[in-house]
Length: 86
Image (cartoon, rainbow, N blue to C red; front, side):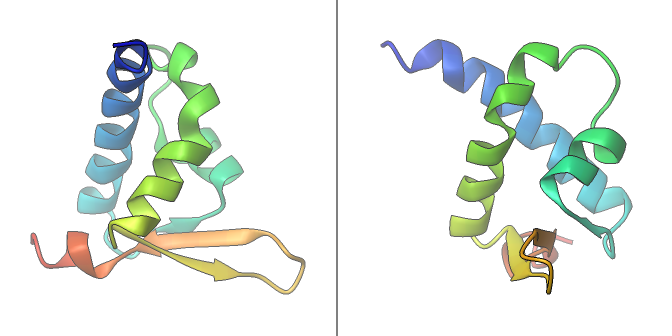
């Protein structure tokens, strides 16, 4: 049960990322860019500490594709698992 509060915070964060990708299917960004531009202002402040974990789980599920940029940062875009839901 100790993981439940974290799950309660991660679910709306994941939902916000999925909504953004549904509205903007060609969107792509780094985690920092997602936080700055993809997520709504307010309401998710407590969940922002989990962005990396949520993105990692979305990559594992095929919902996001991860590409390493030349400067070493990771770039994410919609994966086949989300594209197949359109």
